Amino acid sequence: MTPFTDPVVVGTDGSAGATAAVEWAADHACLRGVPLRVVHAVDRLPYDAPCYPIPDCYDKLAPSGRQILDHAARAARDRRPGLGVTTRLAEGRPGRVLREQASGAAEVVIGSHGAGGFPGMLLGSVGNQIAGHVAVPVVVVRPVPPEAAEIVAGFDCTETSGAALAYAFEEARLRGQRMRIVCAWEPPVPYGPAIAMDLDEMRRAAEEYARGELRSWQGAYADVKTELDMVRGHPVSALVEASSRAVLLVVGSHGRNAFTAAVLGSVSRALLAHAHCPVAVVRGVLS
Image 1 (cartoon, rainbow, N blue to C red):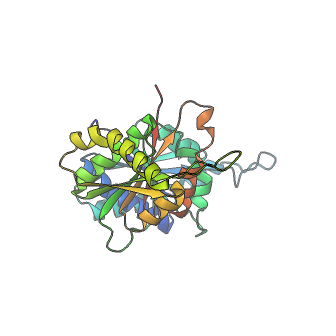
Image 2 (image 1 turned 135 degrees about the vertical axis):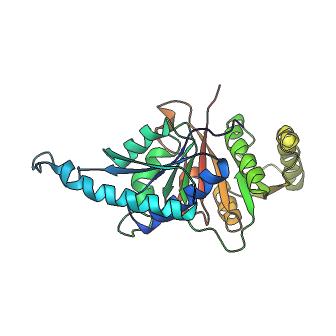
Image 3 (image 1 turned 180 degrees about the vertical axis):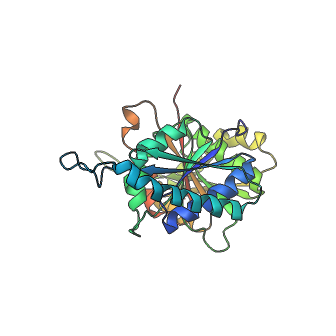
């Protein structure tokens, strides 16, 4: 994986969840050896309806935005003294602003709760507009489970898993932690007359194929201790369960083009909502 040189970008709205995201992003920027950029979007739309415009709406909202940024920057510097921290106040909807900021970022980090304390509000209104829609990884921060000590990566044996695996292996290497690769499989649903299936044989075949696909990755990251978990079941349930022991869950998103990336995949969306740890969504691009 190419080393990061661009800053880690983190969005903040002043909420407790956003502050947790800023602290996580500061830690990650320090780990990667890159600066941190804290971004706040001044969104006049909830207040300045087109039919009832408020004169100088942006000028009235901007001071509050600067206070939010100042507080976030202090939290980042307190967390990681010596870290290069810059701030950016931008006008527009948060999702659009962060998509624009992603073009010059190593990754984008947001919290899992927005202002107001409603679970998933920031995720629902902003996270789903970013994850899978930008070329860089998007991390949604939530608390790390007690005693978590591994990186978990979802693997579906496709080429588009490559970007997510590269990110996960690099994380495990930098953190000095083991990596658990979860590959969920389910027997095919028979159409027509029932056909006897040897489930043990199917599992062995699936595991053999997965190990073959992972061999080159394990060779490239020989210093990372890995473990492959073949789980019979739906990938969402398998990865949610594994996330209860993880410091970070990494999943891929098959963003092929503007049309197919319009909707975040159902697996990634469900994991962003239900995982027990921070989740990184890494977009893969088909050749």
